[in-house]
Structure formats: C-alpha cells, structure tokens
Amino acid sequence: MPSRITLTVGEPVLVGDGVAIVTTVHPGGVTVKNTSGDSRLLEWPHLSSLRIPGPTGVGAVERPLHPLLECLTKNSREVLFDRLEVVSTVLTGFRRGHAELAEPGEPAEPFGPTWGVGIRKRCDRMAEVIEAERRSDRRLLRRVAAGESRVTLSGSTVYSWVVRWRQDGLAGLIDGRNLRGRIPYDVVLPSEFRSAADHAVAQLDGSRSTVSFDELMRRIRIRLVAADFRGPVPERASREYLSQLMRERGRTTRSQRTRSLRGTTGYTHVPVVRIGEVVAIDATRADVLVYDERSGKPISVEILTAIDVASRVVLALRVVARSADSVDASLLMYDVMRPMSQLVEGTTYRDWRWAGIPEGIAPPFTSAVWNRLEDATLQGDIRSQVWRRTRSGPTSSAYGSAHRGAVFLLVEDRQRHRRGRGAAGPP
Image (cartoon, rainbow, N blue to C red):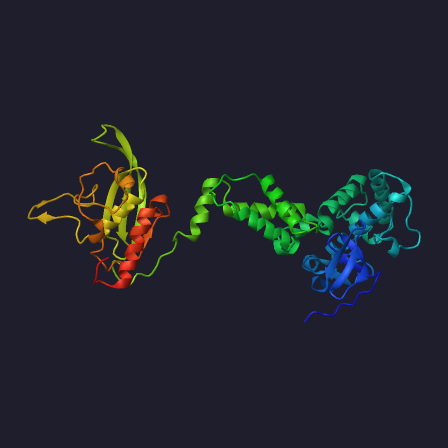
C-alpha cells in the first residue's frame, strides 16, 4: 500500500526537470513551480514518497521519475544530484534552484541572471569552483593518485550539463554508461511519448511510402502537443526507442507491408481433423515465360494452386496470365469442388480439366466481366455445379487482390451459406 504524502506550500518536490516548490495545495493535487518559473498541476496519484536519499529537503518525487532513480547505484545518484546543483547554481544562482530555498551567501557572483554574465563565463567560473573543491576532498585525491579519477574539470563540460538538462531534464544529467543495458524504456521515457511513438509507427502498414526518421519525430511532437504534454523527453532514449519500433515494423515500404499482413496471414500449423477440411490456395509467379498461341508472344504467367492441408494432395491447378484476379480464383475453386479432375480410360487419359478455362461453364458474372474473358463460347451455369461437394471445409488463401475481389468473395460467401443449410436443397 502506498505511503501517505503530506505537502505544504513552499516544500520542495523532485520532478522531471529538477527541484520544484509547492505553491498551492488542492484536494486533487498540488501546483508546483520549477526553476524556470513555469507552474503545473501534479495530481496526488502522480506523486510518491522519495524512499532513497535525494536533494536536501525533498520528501516527494514525481512517480514516473522514481523507478529511474531506483535503478541507479548510490554513487550514480550522488553524481546526478551534484550535477543538478551545479546546473541550478549556474542558471539561477541558487543551489536548490529557487530563491525561496536560498542558502546563506546566495546568489554568489557571477552565477544567476542577476549579474548579467553570459552562460559560458558562468560555466567557466563554476568549473574553477568545482576544481578547487575537489582539491580539498581527500577521498577524491586518493582516487586520483590511484589513477581512477581526475581533479580537473573544464567549462565545456559544465556547459554540456546545462545543454543536456535543457533538452532532457533530470534524465539528461545521468551518465549514459549507468543507463546502458540497465534502464527499460518504460522507466526512462514517459508513457505519453511511448503511446505517441507507437501510434506513429503503427500507421506505416505498407499502404503508403515510408517516411524519414525526422518526420516520425515531428509527428510524435505534434501528437504530444495535442495531448497537452509538456514534460521532458530524453533525446537519446527517445531516438533509440523509435529505432527499435522501426526495426520491428521494417525500414522499407515492402517490409512494412509484409509485416502488417501478419494479422491476417497464418504462420503456424493448424490441427486438421479430416481430409478436405482446410484447402489452401496460393498464387506463384512462374520464373519462365510461356508461349501464348493466340497472341504469338511469350507472356508471364502465374500458377494458382489449391492443396488439401491434411493430405497434401493438390486438388486443382490453374495457369493464368499474370496477374490473377478474382475470376481466376473463383474458377480454381470450382475445380476444387468438382468430383474428379482427370478421366482415365484403359491406357489413355485426358488432359487435366483445370489446365485452362474448363468447357461448359458460364460463370454468373456481369457482362462487363464476362466480356474480358477470351473464350465466350462457354455454356452452363456455375451456380448449379460449383456446390456439388458440400462437405468441403474452410478455404485458406493467400492475402492478395485475387482472393479479395468481389467475385471470389461472392463465391466464398455462397459456399459458407451452402454448408450452413446442409446438403439438400438448391444453392
């Protein structure tokens, strides 16, 4: 059970960008002011007690920040809070970041905006102060003598802390070596950013061309602004998280389309109870050209195959000019439903019926579709013939336009309707 949190006006709270002070206490939370002077509301469920040593006087911490601090070692947390004090002193002139929490002698020249000194010069002066403090630290001097550390510190290093704090808040002051392989993304990144990143990457389903990395970051920032999120987001961790999502989704449009179809394409074996229960249909483009007797030209063809999953028997096969459409898929289904595909008499046998368009069939297509067929002499009615085998089970087909066309879906729907009514009666 979470411990009870009691805050009063003027009390410090550790938030994502450093130390903030409570300005107002509400029944639903508290209003805090950060070192930049910006105010925001923190609800009680978003606060937790600080169970580890932190900055002086801080007893509460913003809840998303607490797991990050607990993942760090004691020495890493001490370094983090020391850097936070350095940055707060350089920018505000106060070690704890607020005039209300000022200590004797603060603000000292030239730190803070009071003296009118530039950031670079303040950082150079702070580096000199830190170097002087280190020379009086006996423990540090012993480490320096052992070659484990050093006393000198440059102003550029202090300035880099200021830049990283402005970009990523408190998380930017953590040494990256302490985070490597230790901190999960759900700890170092706010949930709002992760949700926006997941939504942006999920839109890359291969239906449209992929976008650049910077464009994704722009879309994420727009979504965060629309959600009124103003918290700090670590730059490096956010880019690593987005890179991980892109590796899972795919870098190219083709790979994104392939992986987006995993929700509709089967990748695992299914238990088949009996023969004829599941029929798989697939379209494969031939690696060779086929001579067309009518046009006198070589053409590229596709091989439509229907196979019984239980027995691995090829039920039907159709060679069509690329690319196969729903008409070809429907005729292939008719071949599957016929009681036999080849006639054998003694030592002679006829050609396979499914090699081309079978004779004596008039599909129930519209005149516009029928006119596209090359052979208009076919007769009969597929509606009265295609449903002879009423015991066939579900059909598993490759995900493509041929198996999602209106004609094929109509045939497939009538097949399900026929199985639901039983063997007797017209289709």
